Length: 184
Image 1: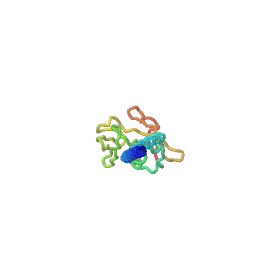
Image 2: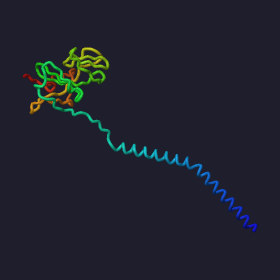
Image 3: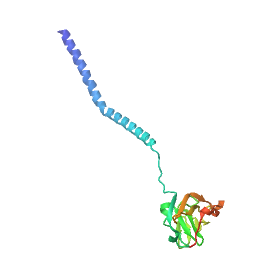
């Protein structure tokens, strides 16, 4: 009997330890859940980064070559500003024909505005000013505006190609592609 009482005491002691271990385990469960949650978040972030890496960054830009209409749609001596926002060019018609100026200030790349009342392009960032033909005359801009290639397509429309730029200081404005001879 003494043995059975000793065995029961040992059993009771073992059950007490198991209960104690269970209590300790239950106390640690919230921390265990937080740890698993953190691991899941880290793995999810890593997988998201890997998936993002597999897809390229794409910058959608307007086309570099585009048609802007028939020559008859433009008035002599006027600057057409309707293409500024869409394609980033001003189209100027003078007595000899057409040229397309790229709407990027040669100082720091801001977008100047055409001020018809003052007959000039004025950069709002640092005050650079350009004559109607694109030559700089005031402010910090180091050189004139750039011209884009301009040609007459077979269907009679004017085509501007911004991928071909002409710089005044390099003699590019003398290139036949930098202007379109047209008299009507």
